[in-house]
Length: 474
Ligand SMILES: [Cu+2]
Image 1 (cartoon, helix red, strand yellow):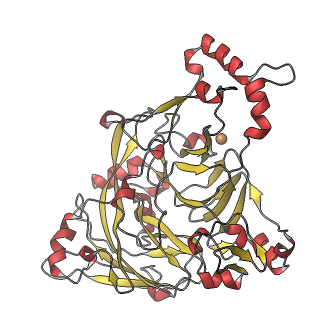
Image 2 (cartoon, helix red, strand yellow):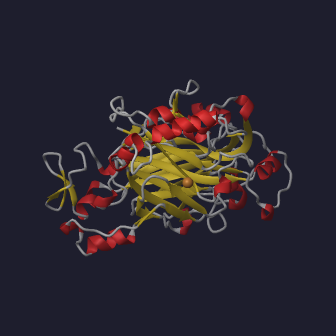
């Protein structure tokens, strides 16, 4: 059990959205949208101070806080911990840099946390944090407390004037891992030789360096090798402009024109997330961040923590594999729960909820696991040799290229080197026929996206919006 203390500030800022579908972006094909959000992060773990600048009780830090006004982005910092941890979140309302006249109350509500009313963040039934206006005096603060009983994916947001504050961007992910004790209680344990067992049965696909941070829930079928947060939201830029310009906006006219994954629209979703490098040392959280370009290896299991904070239902669709639903709203999937109760796992058996689309209402979270099995075996013959009198795929693609140069895609391979992104030609990839075909380096690209396909746009321009890639290689 650890104490994890976060200090979070509310303020305003801007995000950049693409205005074209150019994969390479610059200042000419992006525009700014005014937003509100939370900044800050992990202050303390147990007695270790992680970031001394977050100590609001030290007056020497106050000047820095004043300068943090106007620096908000979407989404807000990730809050994480494990079951039974003591999670504290101190909230400071910095006020707005570009709308200094706004002095509304702010709160933090953790959806799914099932907290008592005193600290549930609903201001009409408890309290809100007023804006800090006298910088000579310590900021008005209150500290929320959350002792998670269940692992899974939650979301926090500003419940004060939620209609506007959620739309403006005041939300972030909450990730809770099961504890080792939870896992042991469910029959999953690590032996002294560093092997993972369910009861007395070896779980061979779980490597010895796995920890409780490789399980979504206390259940052996929720093991994953890598995890990503997919926080979905949508924006009506007219609303945001009106807030910036102090104009009334009637929320019954809500009409989104941008759809975001972790605060960004395609093609920005492919690039490294600007918040990742800002992340301070996060003890016990090696890999969790807001990257939305999923990069995994064949055979790996990837957990997608999908959260919908938009004002529309999202049918989230994954190409390539059917996924298994590990849980929803921080509750273990009921089929997995039933399988455990009936002891089906013992017999190497279980029941799973599978699918290729998960529909998320506003505020819902889904934990889905993809087993990225290699499909080259089954399709290799057709792609590289042809089958049943149909010529092999590369020769077909060459014909297409002869007729139209634009018919073959170029794909940004691991767009981690922005702005000098490498592109690969799909024909080269797909056409690496024997004997030059290098089976050991054959990346595949799958997409996942909002299946209400008009949301794959940026103000009407396709492709854009809620669309991103999964790169799989060896
Ligand atoms: Cu699709």
